[in-house]
Length: 295
Image (cartoon, rainbow, N blue to C red; front, side, top):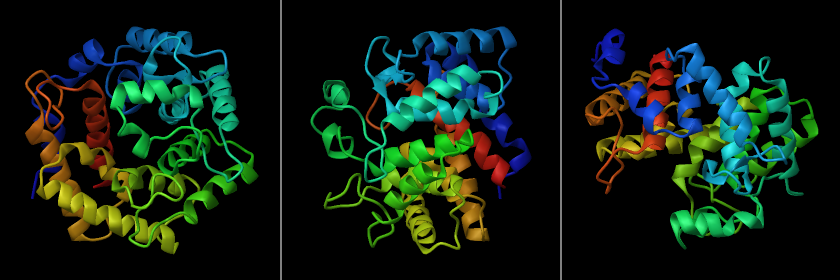
């Protein structure tokens, strides 16, 4: 068994300098909210940059590209991250919340604006539309929005329940979810986002939908770790606190893989790439901290 008290020291390379030099605002905010020791003047500068990047509609632009249309994905991720700082940044939190709510559809799910279509295609090509379409409610995006709204204690329970129910009633029989209604297959990469959203609403393993999703994610995570797929480890803590020694070992193995695959520049390299990726790296550093807290 790994010595868990020493694991943080076993991140052998300087991830903080790498992320502060190469990461976008979200990557840097993850460092702050994970509790790493970022100097106060740098923290203030990061939050000032975030406020300056925000669009007039309250949203955060797609890809953190100044002037790009606002994205529910980016805005929800940032809102969840800064929720612990909401007392310090009330106006920022309020305006981001207003934008997210504006993107809720009649079916309770959340969707991106049609304006994002060329940006999504530019980043991921045609395949992006298969899991990230615009104009329709997306399950994993709804999970992110629901987690964000719950994290800041949004008080319109009717809207929250509609989002919850959209997720509960769109689950597939294998425990995973499609990316959107009428999609013919499940996307395991979205399950972690959905479980976090449901958990934020108080849905837990007493609920069959949640438990089926959790079991499906555990199996997916087991397969990913056996295949040393570092990309999937970003969902490591979505399973929550381990309930058995087998689940505990899964978390430990995930932590070990994060340690093992760190690049000398402090970041992590995605499969098929030849250099470290700041977004993947910041998410793994964030998961590393959260996974340790669960053990």
